[in-house]
Amino acid sequence: MATVSSHTLNGVDGSHAGGIAVRLVDLATGRTVFDTRMDDGGRLTQEVAAPDPEGRYELVFQTGTYWQGRVHGTHGARIMDEIVIRFSMPDPEGRYHIPLILSPHGYSLWSSTEHG
Image 1: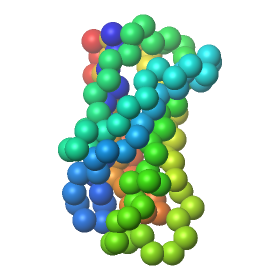
Image 2 (image 1 turned 60 degrees about the vertical axis):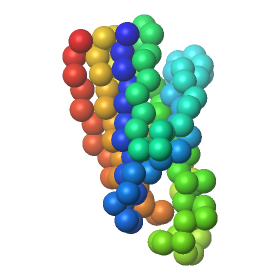
Image 3 (image 1 turned 135 degrees about the vertical axis):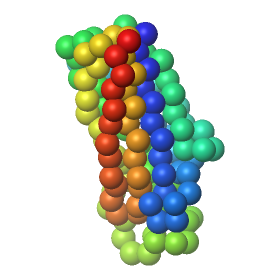
């Protein structure tokens, strides 16, 4: 089983960005692999049974609702409500960690992979 994990951080104030809805979609089939939320500490860990090593996946973070109601840094029109990351999982036993630093109008991303 592969593991997809993430950690979301609020780049405006440095806090953990918890509660963000996130889903993983298999692009070949259109099937939603998981649909969940980041925990209160902005962390996600989900197991993925038998990912296709040749497949492509889309991890979607619903960040628009996270920024709604937050006073700091959200003035003006927001044009980005989702962050979409496309990636593959060539090792069906691997761990794919995709952390994000968020701001109301952008993000920073990096990834790491551990092989099973």
